[in-house]
Image (tube, rainbow, N blue to C red; front, top):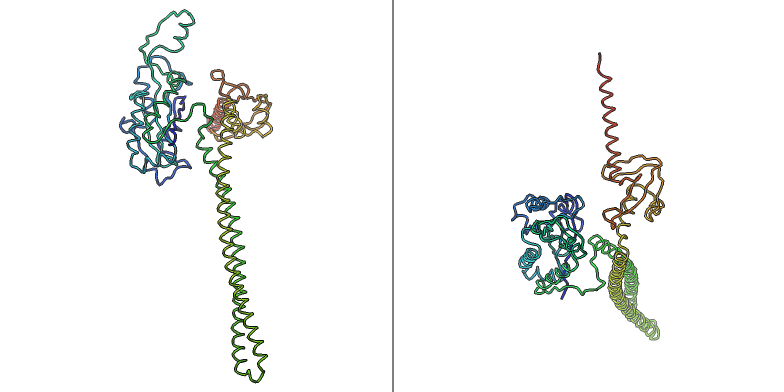
Length: 445
């Protein structure tokens, strides 16, 4: 019996275009098989008659009657990926139960999050394991958890808000208790497909798609190296076999020549005497024994070749198994590191951003430990595809005020994205001024 796979991801900002392009296959990822993309299915989007996933998110929020202003950092949607162990999901597909599995997933989404809040569900069949990308809007009603806590603390409330008003609140939807309940209820529905939930407290963690394919590529290179070594050893053995056959062929030709000489000797045996004839017969037998020995040598070489091939095949399987264990062990270590050090992922993201902007490895090492860096030179923007010159700027990595789990890179205390935008606008204004000056010079009074 395999395990369920249930992953939740918060979506912030005014748009989730990048993920929508991935889900709707406007862009084809490297791990997808283009020949199977036509098997993907919209399970909800087409029925809702909306233009696309982003439009569905916006439509639901606007139609929910939310009166409170939605901030830019507020979670507008929750992405849910539903799947299971690869072998069990392939069994579901091969047994013709995929439509039933999809329908059970939709019914579970409607029950847990509401039919009107489930705005998109897409079945992907062109990747390694069949899975569903679902999108729900965290619209809830009832008293806010914060207000309830304030009542328990005895704080005075000056204005009581209606508890029936619709609110956009992912924190109420993704509480710890509810997450446990989601996994319990989902595993109960998936049990008939041979899928169950993982053990609570287990150190097993999900591996990201990118990390999974990096591991596959690394294992592939190692296996290719082993196969190349086996091919080289096979070629060397074949060379030895060809050489042995050549020697045997020569020996056979010598044997035929000896037989002819023996026949001649028999016809004139009386001229040379019986002793010489016996000597020729003895020599012929000796040559025949050598030919037999050569044949046995060839058979031994072929047997050794088969044994070597089987040995290397066994060693290759053992190496693959050891590599797989090592990959699992390293993944557990990485996941533990992310759990123990929450900012570790953010530090990796900052390190990548510094490298793309143009900082050296030494400068990046200074920044990621939180030390300010005085920098003069050029900073490159991937968004605007150009570099901007800066002189004696103070660059530093810090935590965002609204979200301490997020890091940002600042230039002269300005977020680097805002700084790039400011520099880009200045360049455009400078170009416009130069163009206006050129036009002014061309006017004759």
